[in-house]
Image (cartoon, rainbow, N blue to C red):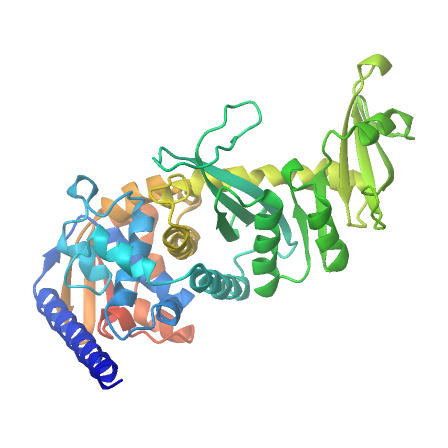
Length: 449
């Protein structure tokens, strides 16, 4: 027992020395004027402060070491859409390590070991905390229409594992399974989960819905896909009346054969809808069955069925609400480069950690986008990284208790001066401490020349 106590105390002393050394070297580097190729990342610092990022990271990476700083490095790597830390040597500049509050650049091995010390539950709790903050900050629409979607990432892993189909018309391949939920109006993600090949879509979906509900989402209409058509998922919504669902039915022969016999209400030429009820075999719960019929000639009619727990009008559900489900694909197209279009490892806790930290980067980038002129708000994550975070001209220096970040010329076309001038006072007026905790409690000042 004495040996364990001594080892614990020794580790605590080493951790304290590590923090002190990092802070000393960081201050020494900041004392010199630094030019970097990642100047635009400093614009994310106020947005990360507004999100309460440091407290979120400290809640997971609790050790009194540089671990939260390493996690901040991963957040900023996601914002830059890089695959590996030293890809093309692009992150070997001091300016990038400084924005993370580090005097050095952490290696891939260090990051791997950091994430491997934590469990999937740790990162699930981080997602819940982030989602609660984003809800309070108004990142989602008040209509609360959400979309679920399995997002399978093709992999070339050498592991022996079951193969999955990304689409029914494609051959089965090795896949990293992820499952996402996003707001259909703002295109902002709420949460996601990952799964090993053995977990079914139903199991992963119920886990994801539970994350969302436990984070404060009590009223919502959730749009799902055919893959979610199972009694377990429908029964979940039946028992949670605050949450409604709308999903297509599978091509079940008994259901499909009933479509032509329904009483249809024409809405416009070639389109009509009908309503009935649906029960799973040997199950007591009844659901609304909605059917849409397309075509002008009777023997050329095509039918599509949906089930729902919502009491909204069938026309609104089928004609206006359900087509919005496909906006979740826009999220993958716009934001996938942040870390959701590649599978570098199949250790679930490590992959879950990386993708969860990418959610923080995405949330901060979303806040930044809202401050850009309207045309630039539609930039993809990759374009935002290239045009704003990487190619801005500027330098960094310290004066008194301020880190002064100076931008030259390029700031004009994205109107940064009006949004980030006198940023410390702006943060104070918002009730946020202007001292940046991961930057030795320095305040931030932007200059535009």
